Amino acid sequence: MSQLIQFSNVTIFQDERPVVVDLSLEVKKGEFIYLLGKTGSGKSSFLKTLYGDLPLTVGNASVCGYNLTNLRQREIPFLRRKLGIVFQDFQLLSDRSNYENLKFVMKATGWKEDAKMKERIYDVFKKVGLEGKENSMPHELSGGEQQRVSIARALVNNPEIILADEPTGNLDPETSEEILKLLKQIAESGCAVLFATHDMLVYNKFKSRTLFFENSKVQEKN
Image 1 (tube, helix red, strand yellow):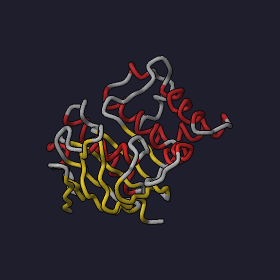
Image 2 (tube, one colour):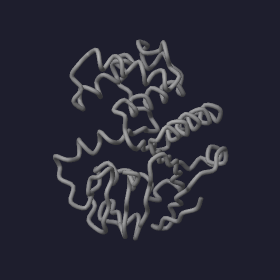
Image 3 (cartoon, one colour):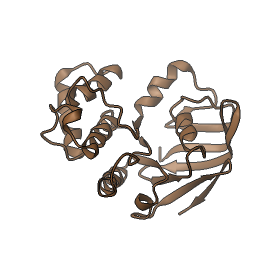
Image 4 (tube, one colour):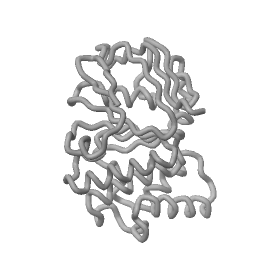
C-alpha cells in the first residue's frame, strides 16, 4: 500500500475548538514532509490525530490501513505499532540503560523472545550511529545522542511512518542538522517521515514537501 495517510475534508478539534479545518491530503511511502507553523497552529493536534490520541469526528481519514473515523479503542495499540514517534524532550526512562529503554517498548508492543529483541536493538542502534552506546545510561549521552536513542526507539517496530514532533527543538544547530539528515535517510529507506518544526534554520537546510499550518488552514508547497 503506497498511500499511508489519506485525509478527506477533515476538521481537527482540540478542547472542542477547531484547530485545523477542511484538511485533505495523501502521504506515500518514503516521503519526507515538513509540518511548518507557529506553536499552537495545529501541528501537534494533527500528529495526535494520526496516532489515535485525538478522536476524529469530522471528515474521513485512514492511517496505515486503519480508519480513523471509527477507530475502536482496542485498535489503537495496533495502529501505534505501525508508527514511530519522536518527541522534542526525548522521553527516555532515566533509570535504565538505552538498551533497556528500547526493550521496554518492545515488550509493551508484544515482543517475546530475548534473542530477537537483542538482535533488533543492536541493529537499530547501528542504524542511528550509536553502536557501542547500548548499555550506557541516557544521562551519559549528549542531547543529540539522546535524540538518536529516541529515534532508535521509534524505529524498533519497523514502522511505516515516523512522526517527529519538534525533534530538534532542544538541540544546537549543528546537532539539529545531524538529526535532520538521519531522518532524511530513514525516509529514503521507505518509511514516511513527518517532521514538525518551527526552526527555519533546520527547514532551510533541505527542501522538501511542506505543509504550512496557519489560521486553522493547511497549505501545501513542494
